[in-house]
Image 1 (tube, helix red, strand yellow):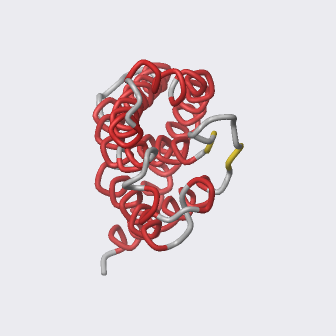
Image 2 (image 1 turned 45 degrees about the horizontal axis):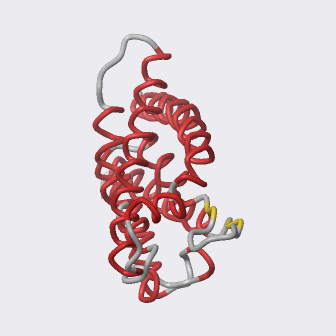
Length: 186
């Protein structure tokens, strides 16, 4: 196995583990959707890593979560994915390419890299909200506007902070990893 493949597998495992850790950080709110950190983990993973490695990290997390209690509230994917909040979870696979598309835009200025990463995180979060809210409506029979009020509005401020933190930390980590990779190849 080449050094670069091994490095990618190690990064994939580290970020899948990070997603597992983020998923158990939950603050229960008065409503059907808890405040959790796994969306931050998905954003950080997508900003930091290249597309295939980030996508594989999220996929590994979701596959582990099918049978292990890695989703909010200690639930497994077998109960979560078909349930009211499952659309938010499976949408993580859609979030990665959105974030990576904006992060892949070449920028001459560091502030632009942060801005593109933040923009990608915000767009991906909107996609997550859409997928999750549609499934929530389908499973619960609630109307879309009512579901937005319950499942999205309480989280927008928190998720904007997570997006900003993931953009700043992710761009910084990506830069460090690039330097480390360059130093190893010399």
